[in-house]
Image 1 (cartoon, helix red, strand yellow):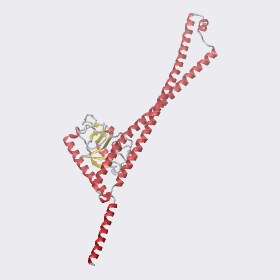
Image 2 (cartoon, rainbow, N blue to C red; image 1 turned 135 degrees about the vertical axis):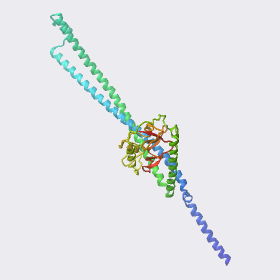
Image 3 (cartoon, rainbow, N blue to C red; image 1 turned 30 degrees about the vertical axis):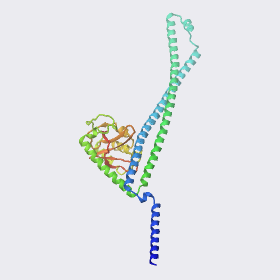
Image 4 (cartoon, helix red, strand yellow; image 1 turned 120 degrees about the horizontal axis):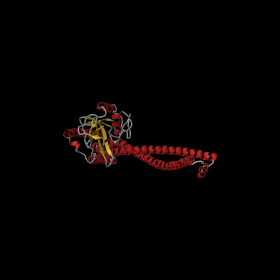
Length: 357
């Protein structure tokens, strides 16, 4: 009886254990073996890669916009040339018409008229000079008309060519923008997929990296090693520590600080959202008109003695990936980091060099 009861209890326990195993197997692997730190590291890798794509897209988009504006400007110039040439044609034709009507009313003046109508050689010479002058004027009017018509045809061809360029650049800008928007959606999707623990771990990873970057930036400035570092990325522009800052440093930093907490948005130049070069442009000028991307900023006057109010920048000229911010001293900058983040104070990043506006 006791043995039977024991066997019954053993069977119940076995069934219970089996149920637990089945339930465990049915749980998603990520739930059973979740590692927030590993998830954070994976997410950071994905996010950094996609943000670099966005940075490159920003440079390409700005270049395309500049080319589009230039093509549109040339179209307007060609149209102005067409209008000017048409006006010249109309003027020449009017003058030729008046000459023809005058000659018709008075009768055509020919060599025979000049010869027979003159009573003296002096009168003949005077009449001949008048006839010759009139013929030259008529010839000049005809020549001017022909030249103006040729100008019209050339200007029309230029206008059509530039209109085609503008159309192509507009289409390319649209494609880049759509691709950037898709990348931003992917970034937000990665954030949404993370658990609260993974997000916290990712914040810890970023904070640790920022501290390491800040310490490295301070040491690089003190030792001067940032001057020769990263030559693969940095253009070989000369250093000019004597260049004066064209905008008061306190003003630049105050403008940047006034935007702390504003969201990063790709392609934005303010006043309520920014990308990295949009923020730098706003801090320097107080305007929401973009003055340059990281590609252009990287070509500004390079300095080895960075001061608050200078610009720290990184740009890979082979891939157009880059980042920039306002240097505030102590290895730190104010920057618009990436999609999903806000304008904030952070460490000067590895590969960055310093330029003065």
